[in-house]
Image 1 (cartoon, rainbow, N blue to C red):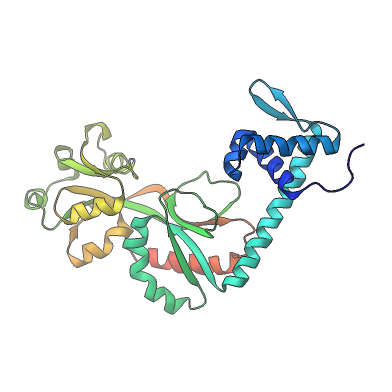
Image 2: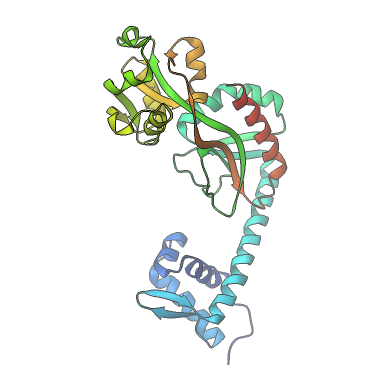
Length: 296
């Protein structure tokens, strides 16, 4: 006879992950257990119910009608548990928000503004998570990133400013005097510094200036934007960067932007999960970030 008592939470968690990911293997990876452990938990649920939750379809799994009902219920229940847990964790942790952003944005834009932010937003304390992946990792409340739609459906996206990019040259660059009065097309004859994290930057700039992206000559590449800009400051070549990340260097005379900046389709955004319980504080943070970006 099917059991009328609730099954163990672990079994429901294993089923929910397998149903959501449509894979026992991926569920096992997400839960950090073995494939066999997830399979046993699902079999235990099926035995307790007296009916199957999945059917085989080739190499994959397809939910039965019973499985689909249980998936919807467990998914909603675990989402509610996550939201409640997150709310309780923040209550215990005070006003600290965990903000994820790339190391380049953190070093070149956020850190120089922290003292001013503390004065303007005394009730918002931040802990930073430097990450290159544009994903909301577990434990991260929000992400400050450059990106464009479409966004994940579960994200709340607060747009802050349009992105503008442009070529920059270090003041110590030996080629600078020869390039000083040249049009943008002069860069077609230069070996351009670039970064793997922003492969679209030079082609976007070329198109905005009526140039053929295929005519660009890419020189030395760097894994992150931070290293790229340090190379430009050192006079190693012409780099391209978001305007917000080089404004301070331009004002200080370390970098020069003789060809100006052009807008892209990307946006500076503050992204967080819907229903996080942190909307009010994140809205205040977003408003401050937007004002700062508008002063570029």
